[in-house]
Length: 423
Image (cartoon, rainbow, N blue to C red; front, side, top):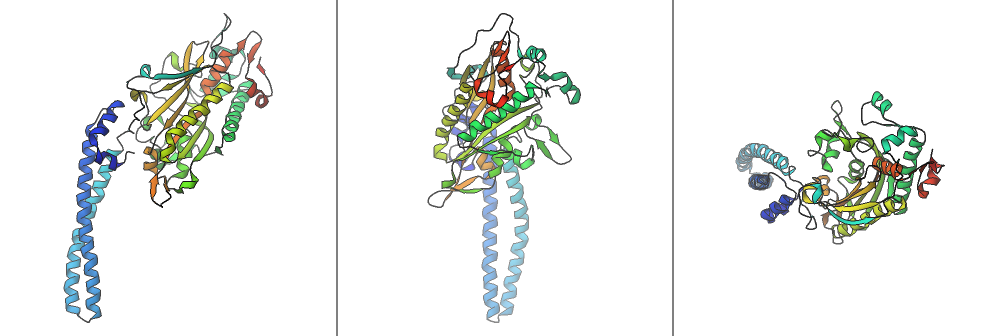
């Protein structure tokens, strides 16, 4: 959530930054400021009346101590009048605060000055490419044919059990999933991330705190009987571990990693881009999250990008790193790098990770703070990244490593797999 102080200080600059994200209702900024002024006036009126009540209460005590009961009774009547005035002011103040929050949460995070201009994914900027795109044999096929040939993922049975987009992994396909998860977690913990295994459902406050609500409400699976949401990413429960926390400056950075299944409705998704593993309703992902000092967040962002890049290099996958333009960024992000791997049989790039700096946007919602060396509370900055999402990694591994005698898997995975080739 944007900080009110930022909006008050330079509303026109805020509008300029929101325009970079192509936010369509800049009038919300003016509405927020108007509601804020209304709230401040009510707060001042309340404080003045409350101060008068407190002052009179002291006077009453002093008069009673002197035995001046009649004078004290006059003061009590004045207090009663003031308290009667305070009740409607309190109601108006609560309503003003509610209205202010309802408008404030409509505003996305401001994009960093580093964010490129642009509205669509075609406007994203490629900052780096790595790895070697393999030359495949003439009879190479996409992963949805490979998984049938080697009987490692069963989409039909998964659809019968649940619905489309819920694959059933089996045999070496299930073992590959388990190996990738274990390898990714080991890679992250070796870099200093503490591993967590969080709940797969979150309450409304948790979803609000990380910015999934109200922005992505239609994309999450919801259980109305309990008012719980299935997590769309481990970012949600893991970041909320520190909701309402007051850390010490020496506690920073906080580095966390977690594996979870992820659940997304993907409403409106259809076509060739969603075939096979390209887009699922349930998929596995390993996440990294950091809570850091505001002065260090962009330095940490670059280190997280390098971390994910190293992971892709170890899998020997061709990749590219994109800096997202304003129109392609998420509601909560200030700056995002996407990682894509090249799927040789499909002849296309597949997104496998996003690494983002949210600055203080999430921290302001969930009140993640730390005390600096002077003891003054400050909002921390939060960052997260996929390290990695499995489905498209599996698609690329299968397609790029296919050969006449089977699918040869990367050396780094073989100790986790117990085999070298899917045959």
